[in-house]
Amino acid sequence: MSLKHDKSDNLFARAMNVIPGGIYGHVAPVAGLPMHLPKYIQEASGCRFIDVDGNEWIDFMCGFGAILHGYSNPEIDNFANVQRNKGSVFNQPSPVMVELAESLTSKIDFADWAVFAKNGSDLTTWAIRVAREYTQRPFVVKAKGAYHGVDAWCDPGFGGRIDDDRSKILEFPWNDLDYLKSLLKTYSKQVSAIILTPYHHAAFAPSIMPAEGFWSEIEKECQKNGIILILDDVRVGGRLNDGGSHRYFNFTPDLSIYSKALGNGYTISACTGKKFLMNASKEVFLTGSCWNDAVAMSAALKSLEISHRDQVAESIKNKGEYFCKGLCARAKKYNLPLFMTGPSSMPYPWFEGDENLFRIQKFCKIAAGKGLYFHPHHNWFISNSHSIVDLDLALDLADEAMCELIQIENS
Ligand SMILES: Cc1ncc(COP(=O)(O)O)c(C=O)c1O
Image (cartoon, rainbow, N blue to C red; front, side, top):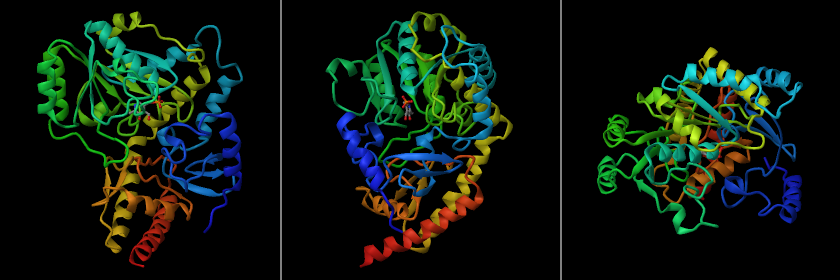
């Protein structure tokens, strides 16, 4: 199947005149998004979308994780529309903000309060400032290669940065507790926070789960050294446990941040925290022009309700297992050493020995020609709108793609 892309290319050419880079960030062609994937999308429903050239795709990226209950979910859209008809941004917050904070603090076991913003980055950065305010210490520890957002203390780019931006950021390799402990010894009583994702989901590399005892050791070190433990649950939140990923891994952070799946595509993020951090959090200024957006808050309220009611984390885990097992079985048929790393509902595909990523890139490119949106160097996402019929169709198309891959490699 050859995909049409004239309209996409035309739009991109127009964009190059009026938008720096045409498309920026991790979805910029070449920089992050492979060229064979569409540049512009027209509409989406469930787990499928149609690009501007009319090509239909079965999606395995879910808006890079923002979609948990399927695109254009009617239950969420209808609920949000009730608020949309009343208005979205006012001079003051609307009642739904209180309802959403109550909903989050009742679902997230350690949380006594919640604040809201628009993006994950807004609140990962705010959270480390809360930790600094509380502890009156400058340093922050993070895992090497972990993404926490676009701000200068953590973004993966180099542009516009000065050395000072990261002079108080320390890094340790994920799971390397000896390294972490030696860092904490060196910087004794100067570390305000350790910020970590629930497991290591770096781009361009297989996902790494926490080693046995990792989280309990992290908790112990934080308690021993008076350090605030911040869970960056922006990407994973709601996908492993509707009460937060710490419940899945059995630990308790002091602060946790959510965004992607929280509003099912409506723009919202949240930080929740323990009571002892309430005063410090009041001291760190927090606002944004449209952050009181009642429509997004309504969508989040409904989205949380659905996650709990339909046991969505369990459901996507089962769907993910079905899909990952199916994909690996088909790979085996062709002697392709495929491993689906990380949790089954957000797997990162890895061909053993494919350090330069050429094989996975080739496979994803062939799959794209069949209408499968597979990303070669970012974890994929399964939503609760992926049905077994969708997954079986995707597996059959992936099988064809693997067959072609082997033919090309052997020719
Ligand atoms: C783990 C993690 N933290 C923070 C962010 C930043 O979130 P946002 O892009 O909404 O600013 C992301 C985004 O991908 C993320 O995956």
